Length: 517
Image (tube, rainbow, N blue to C red):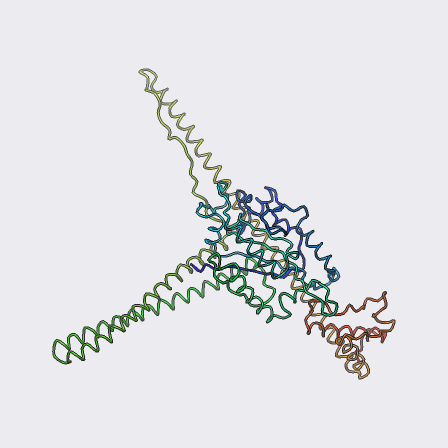
C-alpha cells in the first residue's frame, strides 16, 4: 500500500461544458438520479454527506453548494461571450479548447482527516453518515487552493469552484477559462496556449511548475507532499477497460518489484550467514594459535562491520518488501473489485427473539396444546425466513441491475470505439484524397508557383487577392479566410494555409482536380 501523503492535481482541456457536467458538479440531482448513479459499481455518492458539500464563491468565501442563481454552464457561456469567444462551425471535426477542468485532491486518509477530523466515516454504500460535521481545515484548504487558482488565472476567470465531501475522498472541481492577450491588439481573449503552452513539451514543463507551485503555496501547509507530474497533453479519465489494463500493468510491475526485493533479501541473508561463518572460523584459528590476537582483532572488526552493513540493508529491504507486498495486495483487490460487477452478498443481521414455549401444559388436552405451540413456533420461523428472503432478494435485484448497467456501459464504449474508428477512417480517406490532389497540382509548374505564393502570403500575414471563383472578401464564398486562430500551433497553421491555397487555386481553375489523363 502506498503510504505517500501527496497532493493531487488533474487538469483536462475542455472544448465544451454541458448541463450534465454542471449538474454533477453542483449536485442538481434528486434522489432518483442519485440512486441511478449509484447503481454503477464505480460510483459512490453518499446522500447523508451531500449537505456537507460547499463551494467557494467569487467573493472567496464559503457558500452552500449550488447557491448561485445562474447555473455553471450559463456562467461559463457569459464569460466566453465577454471575451469574444467564437467556436468553429458545429459540423467541424475539431474544436479549440475553451476551458480547463481541474480536480484537486490528495492522500485519501489525509483529506478525510481534513474534512472530518477524528469522526468515524463509514464508506460503505448506503451507510448513514448523517452525524458527521464539516471541519474548518477542509474549508481553509479549499480557500488556499482557490487563492492559488486566482493568482494564476484571475479571479473572474474561475467560473466554478465546488468541494465534494460526499464521495470516497474529498476533492475540488474547478472550472477555469484560460485567458491571454492578442499580440497586436493587446485585447484579452480565450487562449489555452497562454496558460498551458503551445506544444506537448511546453505543457509538460508548465505542469511540473504547477505541481511545485501548488505544493509550495498550499500542500506544504497541510502535510501534503508534491504530487507527481503526468507528462503530455489531453490527459483524460480512463474507461473501465483501460483502467483495468492499467491496474493489471501496475500490478505486474509491483509483482516484479516484490520478486526483486525477495531476491535481494535472500542474498543479504546469505551474505550475513557467510560473514558469521567467517567470524566463527577466525575464532577457531585464534584458539588453535593459527593467527595472532592482533590479526584476529583486525579481521573481527572488518567482519562485524560487514555484518552491520548487511543487516542495515536487510532491514531496509524488508521494510520496502512489506510495503510492496501490501501495495500488490491492494492492487489485486482493486482489479478484482473493478473487474467483478456482481459483488458478494452482504451478511445480513436480523434481530429476533428465539421461539419459546410459553405456559405449562394442561393436565388434559396435552396433544392439542403441543400442536398449538408447534404452530406458534412455525409461524415465527416463517416470519424470520421471509425477512431474510426479502433482504437477499433485494440484494439479488441490485446485482442484476448492476450487471445490466455494466453491460450497457460496455455497449456504449463499443459504440463509441466504432464511431471513433469510422471518424478516423473518414479523416484518413479525406487526407489521402487531398494529398493526391496536391501531388497532381504540384506537377504543373504554374499551378505550383501560384499555390506556394498564396500559402507564403497567408503564413506571412499578408492579404491575398482572390478572384470570384475563390474566397477572400466575397461574402458568398465558403473559402473565407479567418486568419490564425488564437491557440493554433505553427505547424497546424502552415498546413491550413497550404490547404487553403490549394482550394483557392482549384476554384480559380474551374476544374475539380488536376489529375493527368
